[in-house]
Length: 131
Image 1: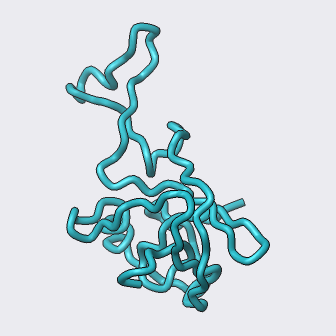
Image 2: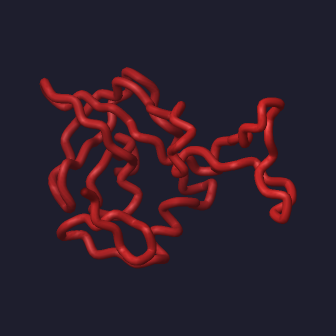
Image 3: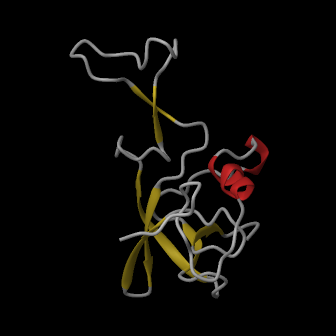
């Protein structure tokens, strides 16, 4: 069971953060967005809050799950009308401006699914440059 703060962010032991930090992490200015890695890329990985960074290899990017609202959003042209529907009555989805998908990494002999570490000191992956 995951525990969340009052503003819907996961609680990470040893990592205090503010609502503003979470808002920034979910929709960063374009200049602060590194490109998503590709399979085979080398990235840094931090398993625990403020833990050491270790090299990891990207195995896959899990961007296809349209239930992940940190990656996808409903297409809405008129908020009063709700989401745009396709021919079968299903809501249309589009990528968010700053997608935050799970990335599967190989670290030594183990695999880890994690998100980008967008809050300083948080667990997750970071690009090799600028970490």
